[in-house]
Amino acid sequence: MEQLSGLDGMFLRTELPGLPMTISPLTIYDPSSAPDGIVRFKDILKVFEDGIYTTSLFRRRLVEVPFNLDHPYWIEDPDFDIEFHVRHIALPKPGDWRQLYIMVARLQSRPIDRNRPLWEAYVIEGLDNVEGVPKGSFAIMLKVHHAAMDGVTGVEVFTAMHDFEPSPPEKNIDKRTLLVEKRPSSLSLIGKAYSNYWKRTFKQPSLLKEGFKAYRRIQEGKKEGLFQNIEHKVHTRFNGSISPHRSVTKYTMPLAEIKAIKDIAGATVNDVMLCIVAGALRSYLADKDELPEHSLVAGCPINIRTEENKEVIGNIISLMNVAIRSDLENPMVRLLAVKQESLESKAYTKAMGPTMLGDVAEKLPPYLLSAGARVAVGMGDNMGVIHNLVVTNVPGLQFPAYFCGAKLIDSFGLGPCNPGVGLFHTVTSLYDNISISTIACRDMMPDPEFYRECLKKSFKELKASAQEYKP
Figure 1: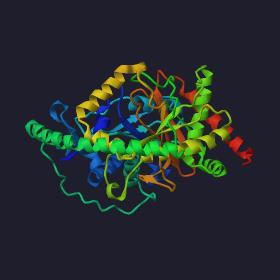
Figure 2: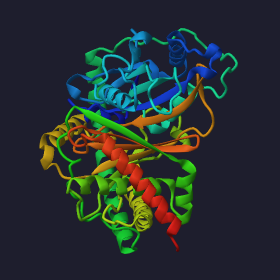
Figure 3: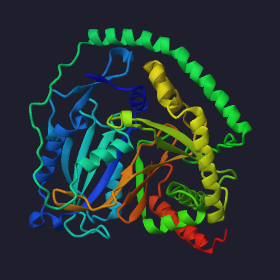
Figure 4: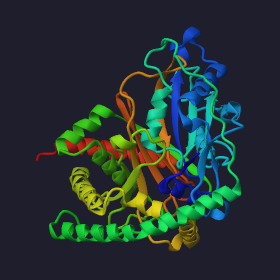
């Protein structure tokens, strides 16, 4: 039995009706490279069955502490049923990209059953009219609760389930009897919660001490000109009450062209993607006469794993806010400004302490985290703006990968809409391409196809501006 960290517990507490906290990679495969050119559902099921022996993610389930007195625990599920978690469905006609986006948006909007291990997998057939996808291809959407996995561990689990040749040698998997844990009694959980309460209480003064040190570092950083506060956080259509419905889209670009733009500006790939998102949102909001005078702010999750905790399945992340300079029309001027904003945001995060978010979640009582989440949701449109949108960068594969012999030909990711923030972007690279996929509250973005065109326009404008740029 293992207790969830404060950060993992926080992702559980912020999941409220209409706000499922799930992250979902979706992958598409061409079975022509598989034996006989066919992948059967039983073959896919076997890969997931093997996975329960190689990663605890697939077989552990939650045990809640009575009265929300403490963070929950993981135990090995005594009633694990692989066929409950892996499901076989088909895309409705006409079976094109639009239908696929609608289907995954609906799947993503459903919460995961907390009485079982916190994941589901959907094998999706019927993709024959999806543009650019070979006939007979299939997709797999893996839904995992954010409390169980972050983006980095998701990539590691994803890599472990794939091969790097169509016909790999047989894997030697130790299939000894899995540990089955008895559910602890409510009395024992309350006893542990009482003990943890006092441990947490004794640690809270250190949190205040670290907070004071962080305040001093931030003030010193401002004096040295390393960063300044983001003065204006404007309210947009993407901030406020979130409906339970979602919309999804994706735009894919050549990775080499993104890297060329990066090199011209002396920026990073992430800076370029933030600039493209900013340009797209300029077009989208201007079309609705809602473009604010000041820049939008993106919340950007950052990986803070070290060698000591690289094997941990769960969340080891922090978050930084970046002004994406959507107030600047010229794409190259905007990119150079985003580059500077990113540097300042990284310096601010360093001064704050990258582990501060996790420390606060670890040392505050769980019921306060729950109450805070409910208050935030209850405030709706009156909630203060922390950031306008989220942009996360998930590393992808740069070499061919296969699942049951079928070649991976496309992938993208979906994240959760958070209280007060109804637009989430995931940047994913695969082979020679890089994509921006978005999931949004459908009331806030009812026209995802138009937003895709805005992303396309923003990329083309930045590319043209970079070619004309003279330092």
